[in-house]
Length: 359
Image (cartoon, rainbow, N blue to C red):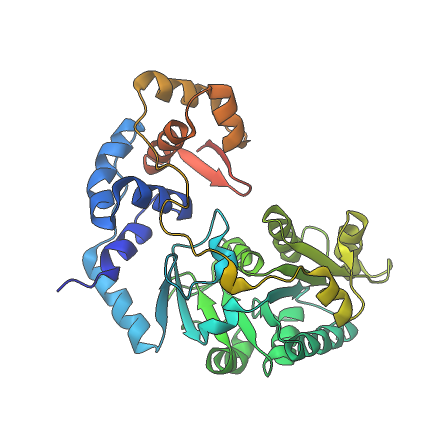
């Protein structure tokens, strides 16, 4: 009997398939098998060649590797999937996890910051994480050097989640190998990429969206301007989550990002009580765990006229999907189908904030 996970993973691992297109295909066709069969037709409508589909043998090897590592899959419609993450538009269709998934269903707060953080900032992050754990809050971070490491060490006894940009069997940085294993055994370790995947630069923004998406709020402790930590804070704000920052000396470049966030409206954090007061109490168990379709109408076939109308509005500059729908004057489901066809054809790029552009 075929593993029921295999078709869904094959769809997800195929070229030009991202979280949005995956969910739209599942909503439109009802199963991964039907979606895989329809991809060549849809790509042809989008004016390109059919994307390369993942080989079944590759998926079989991936499933075997995940099981051999003592890990498990969490699909978007599984009851154990992080509920706040499931609410986001870019939620990964599948996560690979080791540890206790229940930690992701508690109130979660992300802690991020500089990799070259000062000793004082690391101490503050470690103590803040410890106090949050005492209050029953799960601390989420990225297992990087500096603030991430301090946050995990402080929260390990109270509950912590590590989200990594590699396969679940890869450690980065290498010096955190022991800490990563401790998080996997005593907390929860999450990876979006298949086992064996090295932590390439393009995977870190994807990792950051998971950290921000599964957390009720994000605390930034030391961050330079244009740092990855500020990207995480921006993603948190776009998801409607609380953004908090620890102030620092204006003479320290590592504090400029946090001070900028506070100037732009982030909550100033000095104690654990500031964090607990900032995050709105949410019972994560009450957050809906969506099934495919997410309450929206599935994409519907568009006519040639509608397809040309949408394509004419697209260009190299990202534009929001809502703006496309308004300007095209078409049904949202029809616009979504045109965008899906273009993406499968390799002609569309999706950006943060539900924006799209021509590739």
